[in-house]
Structures are given as C-alpha cells and as structure tokens.
Length: 419
Image (cartoon, rainbow, N blue to C red; front, side, top):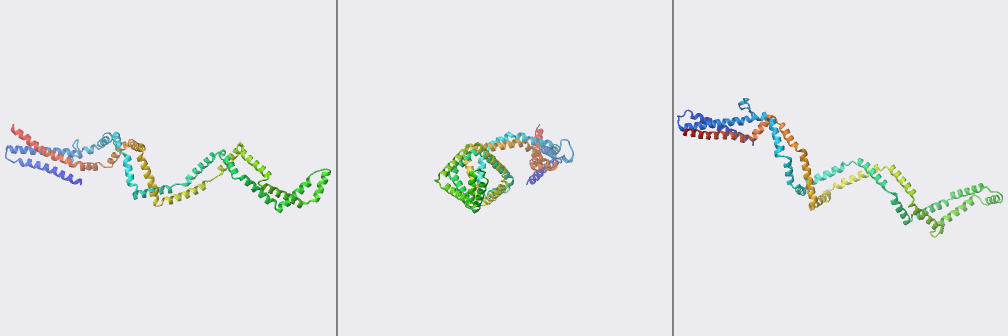
C-alpha cells in the first residue's frame, strides 16, 4: 500500500522533468519570436528547477548518479547524528517527564479500572483464569516449609501462657465439679478392692506377725506379746486388719461422716492455698517448659496442613465457588471503595504515584528503546524505510520544482521581453 503511491509520485516527478526537457528541446528549432522566447525560458527554468530538486531529494538518501559529490547521501553519512537528534527530541521535547506526568494527572484511572473490572469480572475467561490462578497457588503451597514456622509460633504462644491465669480457674472447676470428692471416692474404691483380696489379707497378716515378733520389750510386756502371738496366727491377724480397712473405707464413703467432712475440708483448704503458692507456679512453669521443648508436632502439623490443602482444593474446584465467594467478595469491596471517596482518592493517588515513579525510573529507556530498534536496521534498510514513508511528499517537491520553475521562467522571460 505504501510502495504504490511512492512509485506513482516518482513516475509523476520523472514525467514532469521529461516534459520540461522535451519542451525545451522542442522550442529550439522554432523561428525566433516573443512566444518562442517566453516558452523556451519557461521550459528551461522548469528543467533547471526539476533537476535541482531531483538533486536535492536524491542527495538526502544517496549519491546522485552514484557520484560521491560532497554533502550528498546525507542520511547514511549522518545516521548517528540523526538518531541522536531523534532521541533528544523524544526525551527533551515531545515526551518529557513533565509532559507525561501532566498527561497522567488528567486520567481518572480508578474509574476506568472499576469499569473494566465490572465489565470483565463475570466473563468466562476471567472466571477460568482466576480459578486456575487460585488452584495454582494452593497447589504450590509447600506445607513442609510452613510446618516448622507454625510449630515455632505455637511453642512461643504456649510459653507465653502464664500459669497464674489458669491455675485458679482449674481449682475453681475442681471444687465446682466436685472432682476432689470424686478423686477421694476413686481412691477409696481402689483401696477397698485391694483390701478385699485374699492375697492382701495374707500379706497384711504376715506383716503384722513379723512386726509383733520384732517388737523388743521386757518383763510383763514381753510376756503379753508372746501370749497374744500364741492366741492369733497370721490368718486371724490378716482378717482383723482387712476388716478394719474395709470398715474404715466404708465410713469414709458416707458423705455425712465427720472424718470424711474433715478430710474434704482439709483438701479444699489445701487447693485454695495452692492459688497463692509461688513454688507451685514455678514448678508448673518448669514442667510446662519441659513438655513444650520435648514436644515435636511438626509431622502432625504437616498432616493437618496437607489435609486442609486437599480440602481447600476440592472446595475451590467447585464451579459455584467463583460465583458464591470470589465474585461477591470482589464486587462488595469494589462497591465499598466506590462509595468511600476518600479511599477512592487514595487509590487514585497511589496508582498515579506508581506510574509516575515508573516513568521517572524508565524515562531514559524510551530513547534507548528507539536507538535499539534503529540499530537493528542496516543503513540501506533504514534509508529505504524513510524514503518509503516520506518519499511521496519528497517526489512532489520535484514536481513542484519543475512546475514552479516553468511558471517563474515564463514570468521572468516575459518581464525581460517587456523591457
């Protein structure tokens, strides 16, 4: 499309030059007259003007007729200067930082962005890309790298827990839920079961006999002990002690038993005193620290995170996830920003600041980019490209030179003839 007008205009320029030359030659054999002189002068001036403009236009791109005449082939010879001037004009005149900033300040980016988002957010392409992006991020989460961080944070948080904040609550719950009574009943049941065993009876009897035999006494006390040991044997002593223990346990099971009530009161007082016992808190802190230090939950955390990751992947893979969660989330937040003029202005200012900063940092790259693209072209290709794009207008200079020369020649010769 660009070559055709160039060829047409070049042909027209050549035709105009040929016409002037033919007219000049045609007037030479004519009989001398005023009209011959005027026409010949016009064609002569047109021929000179056309040749001069042909020389000037050709000299821009190459040596006329291949002759290395000084100050011709200006573009190939001055390529570096021309490139530098183009870059200088771009950076310092046409696309200055100030002009770009001024242009940036005339745009309302938030309105355009909100309009674009509102238009595209419900399209299937955006939906598909957003879902793919979400799935990609979730899949590429490396739980093995996150687990140690979570483990460390959990341990830090647990170490920050103060026993003084929770031990009183524990004591209150023990009293409120009667865990102290339940604990006592549990101990009594265990003692009762243990005491009723035959093996326990024999063991207790044997221990009693052994103790009696080992008692050292003199006189009447020694005689009494020997008489008692002859009256009872290991089985009888074991049976007596067993019955005493069972009856004692039964008495402590009675909630109205005075001994039980006294014991429970003592237990409750002891529990209450623990709330203000600093040694207990210190021991609890040491115990807590030891347990936390030895605790290694990383594998469990990895298992939990992996399970959560798979569940989230399955949840986000549901086609309704975008419409039910992502779309309302984006829409609601956009509406809130639109309604809040202050936030909108802040967002607008931030966007412009980022763009302006980008322009400031990369403004010099405009010239660099132009130079790189121009350097990719060899001189011949660049010359042809420029001649192709502006050649039409340059060829019209040749046509205008021939026509204007012809008309001016007519006028000058006419004036000369008059005088």
